[in-house]
Length: 398
Image (cartoon, rainbow, N blue to C red):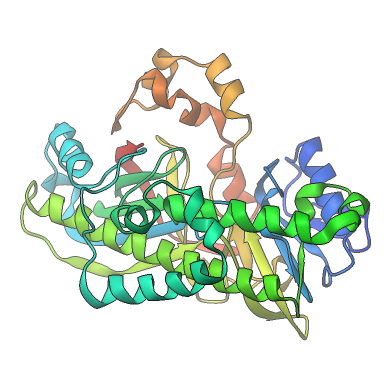
């Protein structure tokens, strides 16, 4: 579907690919549009909703500046998916043992590995680059307990919140593994540290911003360069975390299921990140806050809520969205509101047929707390085309 709304409250327009947008998001997007370094316009994806720091589902092109809070604290959060040679009828009728095997192999929630599972040159190389960052910003080390060991032990772990590991079945009954995670505790530390640095660096000018969370680094300053270095490292860490997690999941499945191979190359994509791209004839720093890249022919992953459908998509390269699309269904209510409105019985009903936790600890992730994924997909037919439709049969959350 084409652009549904055009907001003209700032120096540049905001192009919104849905009519389902809350007032909080409209206000946040209007604040963003007032900043002097936004290039061309801001795009809001069909799953847009109010977020901390900046609107989730926003795509922000900036020239000469980056807003750390727009990238957020779950730097490099994203998706990984892989198709297996197995078919639905190769899975056992009761999938509890499969779920338990994955949960034993991959730490979830606040858990981490007893020791790093990524070894050798890979761990040493990423550690060397982190050392270069902490040498300039030793304050990072003080923000996480056992900093030197924790980031290594969290590689290949899930985390909590809306992060998940799933087994899914597609329209041809093929089995997929899909997972959602980011840069874990170290990414959170880097995000929080530089968000506060940006606010401090702006000094009195911070008071001129419509929202203090929009504090930014200006290109050419030392902290701008340091942030680009740190956020790039965290994004690489997130990719490696998902890759290692996928390895561990496949290892667990090999012990539970008949022998299998992988039949489709893994898709591994961020949806909270910043990188240099060229749009409308200018090189910009493009921040995707809850959005994935959807260049022409590029494969991506759009998950629904637990119990709903998910999609493997191919980008159409829509310039008005800065070659982007939604990163999921998008929340339609806060976690607090979901816990107030729903209980564990509602969760069990809404996740019927899915092997997953159904206790009050994950009620805030109930499908009813999210937008209708079918409506979200209907609003982005100009952005992506569907390649595969997936239905969850196992869902693991922290």
